[in-house]
Image 1 (cartoon, rainbow, N blue to C red):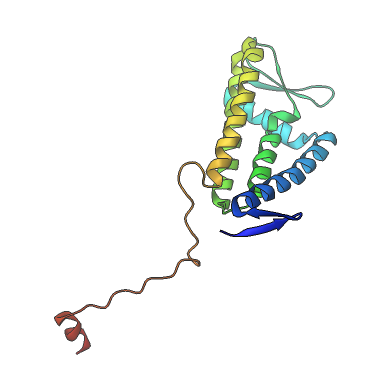
Image 2: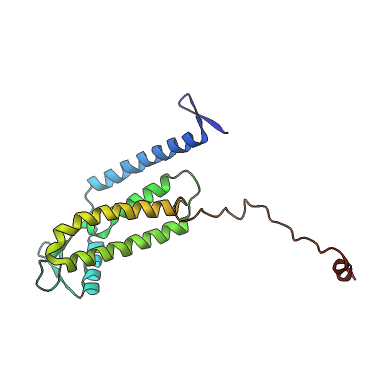
Length: 190
């Protein structure tokens, strides 16, 4: 068992990995909160999100006088597209958890996870626009589902869910093909 020293304490491999993960996650959470306190608006992403929702639901996108985007479906109340609708927090949390992980991780799975989160976010917004008057009922439930989706995709990206990650080919020794024995070997030499 490998032992490391951390601030004068001896840590085994498991505790060392936990301390590394916690320290990295703490730093990335400070970055997240500093970005969050700056109140980013992402106007182009809000426009693209509102336009895509309007297209996928067959709704109408309305631009307010203050530059806000609304999506209306039939006679239901318009849904205001805010900065949180673009899914930037979910993507930031997923990336933070992924980058903080001290062990092997799959960048390919992370890219797939980002795509899944974007598709999930669009489906969630489509459902909320189509739900009309039930928006206030479904919105808190979707926030819980979003947390579960992010955690599940993170666990999948680091190989803790849905199968282990394959070892890198450079770290595996290559096997040599066995030489044929007997009469076949003698025939090939001729």
